[in-house]
Length: 240
Image (cartoon, rainbow, N blue to C red; front, side, top):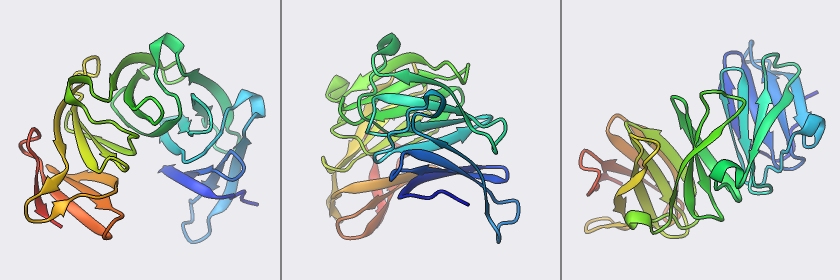
């Protein structure tokens, strides 16, 4: 029997879906070998084997044999071993402050190559971790709000593509662009707030990238913004 209680995030790999449950602090694994008949495979709850799964507005990503989970309910990144998806187990975690990591109220995150890029909601920051060893993440760098012109007030959603991190700031009504080509030295390169034709982007939420075009959704107005970002220092709107 699948355990789904206010499911808030999911990711998939192979024949399995991994679902973060905000309602009861757990991760549900679903076998989708037959997509028309998904079935329960495994489950791990907060506290089980040392797992910390305070999934308040959290996020989940699977990479190889490991699932990474964040949530604003606890200042940690939880790592779950899913070598056997039917028996997920707590592998490790990294807490705020470990080795210099800034992950108070860790929110959404993305990964590219051997790095995790985590938005720290309370710290107003972008935290970068090295996951070359997937069980033992290591703090690499942090970019804070205001540092070098960066705007990271309550950062919301992140997408890393082509050496850049695109970050929506929901409450600050802007999209921040950070150069992460060298994860050890992230720096602000651009920001978008408004366009003379389409006006100000209000409550930007989701973000993705197709080719060289970042695409951002905004809740106010129910809009989808497509940007031309060949010049990341001065991104322009190509359509709304």
